[in-house]
Each structure stands twice: as C-alpha cells, then as structure tokens.
Image (tube, rainbow, N blue to C red; front, side):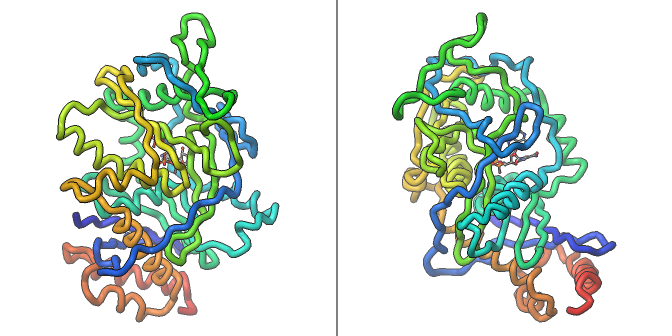
Length: 381
Ligand code: 0WD
Ligand code: CA
C-alpha cells in the first residue's frame, strides 16, 4: 500500500518545475482522531451546453427517472457525441468562482485554502488504498491558495483518447445509463418519473442521445481539517426537486453484476471511489445499475453515501474513510507549508526522515535543482 503520488509545483520561472514525490504514510498522523470534514454547501452551479459552452444556468440539470427493466446500454453507441480528451484545466471552476465572488457570496467570506475539481481530490484521498493507477498533479499557490490540476502528459492524453474499443463501450454504458435514468423535466413528489420514448424507434425511457459535452456542475464550499476547500464537480441528476443545495443530488454508476464472492470483494473495493467522489461534493445518494457483460441492466441498488463505510468495515478488502481523510489533511498541510513558506529549513524538516523523497536514490540532484528553481522564483526567500 505504499503509493507515491507526485506533485508538480508550477512557478513563474523559466526552469520547468521538478516533480516531488510524496510517500504514504509519511504524512499521516500516526494516531488521533480523523480530521473533521464539513458538510458541503453549494456556492454556485453552471452548465456546459451541447457545444461545450459554459453558461451560468441550470440548463444541463437533469431529474432522476426510473429506467425500464433490462435497459440495453449499448443503445445509441454509434450516435455518441464524444467530447475529446483534453487537459483537464481549472478554467470552468475558476470562472464559476469569480462569478460567485462578484456576487459576494457569503460562503466565500472566510476565504479558502484550496481549489480543485472533485475528481482530483478523490484521487488524492483514495491514494492510501490505490494499488494500480498512479497520477501526477500540478499544484499552484497564488496568494496563499492552492490550486490543483491533474497533470496529463502527451502520452497519457493520447492513451486516454485512443482507449481500446472494449473500454470505450464500457464508458459509454455509463452514459447510456444516465440517459435512461434521467429526464429534463421534474417528476411529481419524490418518486422518479417514468420516461416515455421520445421518438419512434427509441427504447422506453431513453431520454436522448449521449453528448458528453453536456454537464451540470456544482461548486461547493467545505472544510477538511483546517483547510477551507472550494470543490467543483459534475452532478448526474437530482431526486424529485432541485433545492439549490446538495441534499437531492444523485450519482449514477454502472458496474458488472456480482456473481461470486470475488466479484463482491472487487465491488466493495470500488465502493471507496464511489463513496469518496460523492462524499466530497455532498452527494447523499448513489444509484448503481448492475449490468451484464453485454450491457443489459439486470438489477439496481441505491446506496446512501454515509452508510457505505459500514458495509465494508472490518473486511479483508475493506477501507476506512478516516485513513483517507487523515492522509488528505496531511497532503494539504504539507503542500501549504512547502509552497507557502519560502525558507529552506522547512524542506529540511520534512525530508530529514527520508520518507518523502524518492526511494530510488535519484532524488538529491533533482531536489537541489528544485531548490534553485524556488530561489529563482522567490529571490527574496
Ligand atoms: O478532460 C478530462 N480528462 C477530465 C475532465 C477528467 C476528469 C474531469 N473532467 C472534467 C469533467 O468533465 C467536469 O467538467 O472536470 C469537471 C468536473 O469533473 P469531476 O466531477 O471532478 O470529475 P470526476 O469526479 O472525475 O467524474 C465525474 C463524471 C464522470 O462520472 P463517473 O460516474 O464516471 O465518475 O464526469 C464525467 C463522468 O461522467 N467525466 C468525463 N466525461 C467526459 N470526459 C470525463 C472525461 N474525460 N471525466 C469524467
Ligand atoms: Ca456518474
């Protein structure tokens, strides 16, 4: 379980920033209670149109609907309008943040310490249990606020764009499930409405072809430990009505049907990502459609986000959110000290134990160069 996420610090310097590796569990407090996480409150929402234009409306907001039994998720695959993979930048989130600031949103009155897309924070917080997928982050500090971006190099981007057909179809299954489970119009009361076919030739419940440009995003404010966070994330739909807060948000997921205890263990490990992703944005409900390998929904199950940790606690493949929060708090604290302080002794302190430097011994030269970059960027340091 030793993961080595890499942070990259970008600076106003001609020298490219050097990666710095953080090692788990060096940053985790050995004991004590988990840091508190404040219930997220929404600051602002926005939509991306089919043409991928950002607008401050709820045009892309969808309402939960009941899918038909045995919905076929390959439907409409060849009509999928697919948003090309680009570098996941912070622009949309920053525009929303500045719109909220212009309106002097009270939730921003106390300031904030970090800004990120929810997916980025999910990656950081689930790192203690991640055994497969590594990642790199760009972290920028402006006026004491940390801004996070996932760092994808050309090779990774190409990889994401050229995914093999089987995986591309699997990704599409998720979007098709969203089409079956959502509606553009609200339903009466809390019960999801039943969609009628929109056009001849479409299956019941199909609410329109998939265009992954279209997204409804919510920006929330919350707090982990003593770091105030502004987090943006995509929300699939709301149950019943939109309250302007996160309490009716619903996350939609598809997953392979569970046939045996091995599948069950695999799913319960995956639940950590589902859980953390929804937890960070204050999404209280996750609806999972279990599908066959061919993409037919066989059963559906609703999970209350807060109840998920109890389902896995104590199991051999289980996980503890407290461990993730402590690690996340440690990472944020470390980065604040590291990029915030300009003196040299801080780095000495953090790295004396040798735990947060590269394990392969190539760290020293790189770190010296990094130190020089820092001095260049901050001549007053
Ligand atoms: O361009 C990229 N490589 C990415 C862009 C990667 C991750 C996110 N984003 C964008 C999202 O499109 C959105 O505008 O950042 C914004 C916020 O995303 P988030 O809520 O932080 O993203 P995350 O929690 O990772 O994913 C939420 C949903 C996914 O749902 P599932 O159920 O699969 O977790 O965002 C969608 C997807 O529906 N999504 C994407 N859609 C199209 N292209 C992508 C992507 N690359 N990544 C996530
Ligand atoms: Ca989803």
